[in-house]
Image 1: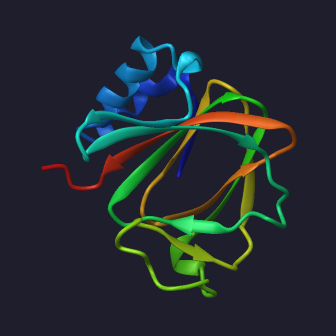
Image 2: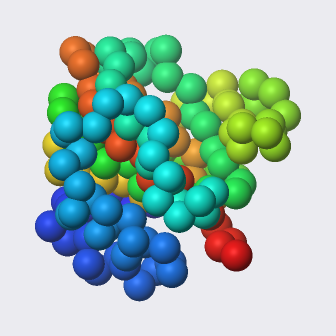
Length: 151
């Protein structure tokens, strides 16, 4: 898991061949003008999902994990907290992994919480279970789905 401000994103571009394209998209796009929905950047290898939803309580949040995609979650508006726990320490799954949706939820409590203000992001790798969208009021964010193994 990585937590950083967008101004430091160049440090992380070398970690994956598609990270630079995601960071370029952030830099070159008026993200605040995008309506909620899905935006293709590089087919199914890199796409963005814009969400604008009310924040949840910590008790409502469920840890989730993905196998095929890395998440870059950038907060645009609102104050969000994201829970985190190593996937290997998650012992109480809600169900099996959904291959179709590339997600598995867990009843486990996060090991830590990270306050993520606007213009900051978290990168969650497949080994990182995370509980997003915790906060009060509206949260607007962009989630970049980055294929773990691009074609």
